[in-house]
Image 1 (cartoon, one colour):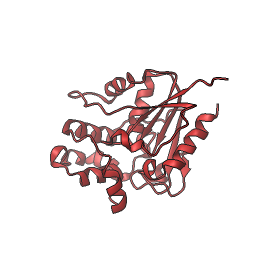
Image 2 (cartoon, rainbow, N blue to C red; image 1 turned 60 degrees about the vertical axis):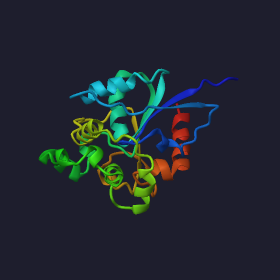
Image 3 (spheres, rainbow, N blue to C red; image 1 turned 45 degrees about the vertical axis):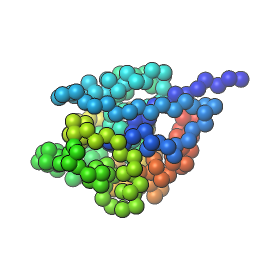
Length: 221
C-alpha cells in the first residue's frame, strides 16, 4: 500500500545556510524534505510581513514546519498563514518570556543597535551571536554553515529576535530543546522535549538523535 509522503519544511538558524541540516536524515519513503532559505528583508518590513513571504515557499500541504533558533521564531509567525500538519521548533523559544535575561536587557537598553553587523562583523563574531561564546569547538563547527552576511538581514534578524513580542505560546507548537543550550538556557523554557547533553547546535552534532526524535513525533497522530 502506498503511503502519502509527509512534506517537511525546515527554517535554519540566524544567518545559517541549508547545510545546517545536512546531518538530519529522514526516510525518503515517508518524508520529503524542503529547506527554506532566508530572504533579505524589505525596508522596515515587519516580522509578520516577512513571515508571510517566507510562508509562500510552503507549497505542499498540509505540511510539517520545523524552525531552528531564530528560524523557530519565524516558523511560528509563518504558521499564521499556513495549514500545517505539525509545527516544531528546535533550540528556540515560544514566547518573549523564554528569552534569557541578557536579551531582555538588550531590548530594554536597545544595546542590540550597537552591534557591528554587516561586512564589518567577522564570521567568529557572527557565530557567537548565533550560538554563544562557550565552546571553541562548537564555534568552529557552526561557522562553516553561516551564509547570510547582509547587513540589512542581520540588523533586522537580531532586532526581531530580541524584540519578539509573543506573549502566549501557540497551543500546537512542539518544542525540542537541549539541556545544555547556552543561548536559550533551558531554565527559561517551558514544557520542552529535552535532548540530554544537547547544545544550541545539536541540529549539527546530534543529527542522528534529532532525526529519530522527529520521526517519532511525526509518526504519532
